[in-house]
Length: 321
Image (cartoon, rainbow, N blue to C red; front, side, top):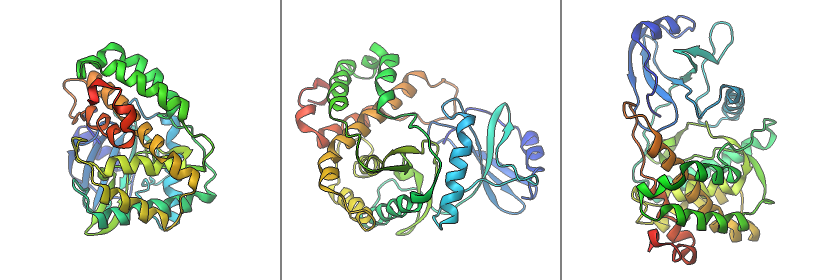
C-alpha cells in the first residue's frame, strides 16, 4: 500500500454517495507498500479501504482480481471483496485512476511472526489453494520468471548504485535459475505476494488475506516459496528462522503434501522469489518519485536470502560473500 494519487475530502465525499456506506467522517493515506494508492476511510457506518490502482496494476486485470476475491469469499476464506455501488458496479474511476471501495478487515500485520502464526498462515494458504480448484479465471503472472530478465535489463548498470557488482551477480543468478526453473509442477490461481504485511492476524488466528493484486495462474508451490522467503527471515534478510519456515510448510501440508518433485524444486523456486523481489524492489528504489508518500523497500534484503536457498550459487557472487 502507498499514496501516489491525492484524493481531496470533497472528491471522496462525492464518490461515497454512489454507495450505501454512509457519509464520510475521515480518510487517511496509508504509506506502507509500493503498488497502489490506499486510504483508510471511515464513514458513519464503518471502515473501508479505498484503493486507486496505479501504473503497475492494469484496469483490465481488475475483473480477474475481484472475481477471485468474490470466489474465495464465497468459499469462506477471510478476504476483502470490493463493495458494489447501487448499480452493482465494483470498479470505478476516481482522480483519473481505476478505483475500488473495499471491505475493511480487522487484524494486524506482523513484523515478527511466531511459529504458531506461521503454521496458521501456511494452513490458510493451503485452504486458499483448495478453494480455487474450481475457479475458472486465468491470468498470466505479470511478474513471472519470463519478466525478470527484461526488468533486469531495464534496471541496467544502475543496479550497481544499490550495491557495487549487483548487476553482474544478478546476471549470474538469472542464468542459473532460468536453466533450472521447474515448469511442470501443479498450477492454480495463486496470491504471489503473501508477505506478513498481507496477512491480518488476531492473536494466533488468520483474520484476513489481503492485497491480491499480483494474483495469477502459476505454480502452486511457487506461492509457498514466496511466503517462505518473506516470512522466515528478518527485515534485513540476514537472519533466517528455520522454525518459522518449517511451520509454514507444515501448515500448508495439511492440505497439500509435497511430492518428491516439489521438494526437490522448492529451493529453486525460493531462489526465484529472491530474484523477483530483488528486481522489483530495485526498480522501485531507482524510480520512485521523491514526493511520493511511500516507504521504499531495500532490494538487498531479499537478495541476501539467496544464501540460504542456494549457498553454492551465492558463493559465486561478490555481493553475497
